Amino acid sequence: VAIAHHADDSIETFFINLLRGTGLRGLTGISTQVGKVVRPLMFASRKEILEYAVANRIPFREDSSNRSTKYLRNKIRLGLIPRIREINPKFTSLMRRNIARLTDAQLFINHGIERIRGEAVTTENGLDTIHLDRIDPAFPQEFVIYELLNSAYGFKGDVIDSLCHSLRHGMTGRRFYSRERVAYVDRGTIVVAPIAPGDACLVTVERGVPRSYCGNSALYFEYCDIDAIKNFGVPEHIAQVDADLLKFPLTLRRWREGDWFIPFGMAGRKKVSDFLIDAKVSMPEKERQFVLLSGDEIVWLVGRRIDDRYRLTPDTENVLRITKEIV
Image 1 (cartoon, rainbow, N blue to C red):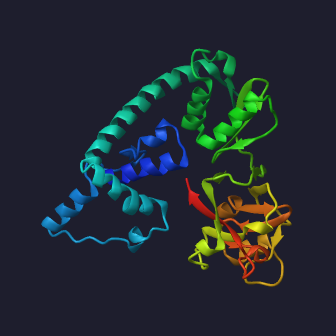
Image 2 (cartoon, rainbow, N blue to C red):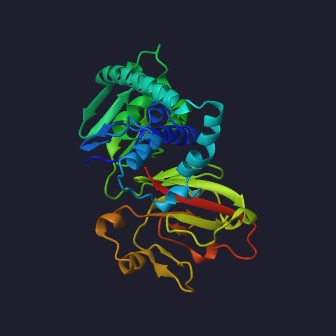
Image 3 (tube, rainbow, N blue to C red):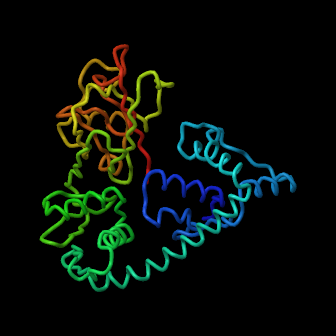
């Protein structure tokens, strides 16, 4: 399958990951091939493609959402990058070379990490164990842990940071999640296992954290004054709730039988199971459904509906805006 990402998309991805926090791999932009998906236009910029299309009378259509600055990518595309180009008109070609060098550096690191993996990681009964005492102490341990967990298991940077914090302070028992794996510290080792079907994938969300992960999605948290809210009607992947009603830390987990909430716009409580049935949600989607809780109360059936008790009202002063994005 060939898709139309180009050089500017890769540069935008560089800045998105840089602003959100990432390792070197996140600064390598968009790869030219992932499995059966290829990106044959990565050699060209948006401007070059448009000029070619116009010159050769090739019809094309642009999505109207490309002009909306409510998306981070578009804020970078329409706001940040044009200003950088004013400083350096050759910015696109410069970034191509930068990303190419970063990609080469990551390939070099990948080779070294695979050698370390062969020496430090063992597998038994479906569990992978990273033996930290087998990692050369001359290497930066947390960087090696990051590369091992990110490259093979899909763990994200801030999740790995939290795991390393637990490791440094001898904290055991806490579980850390990627899309398909769970990791925990056990007597100087890191154990990685597939997420069991009944695992709630429960994580706590402290006040002020920029994001948290749930399954194959990330939630991004933004605190703002009510006067900064321009649109009160938002799509399902965004929740705007009264921040002053929340009790921190919040809890993020998979929904379970018996969960109920008061869907926005309704007066009575409704079981989450009934809401998902009425919404004709498929079984695989149900298994991936998460809820965000304040205390024991559901604040948001993630990606679907907020609880009416946490809606914005004329008395609201502070807002927590939460955006769900697939990662």
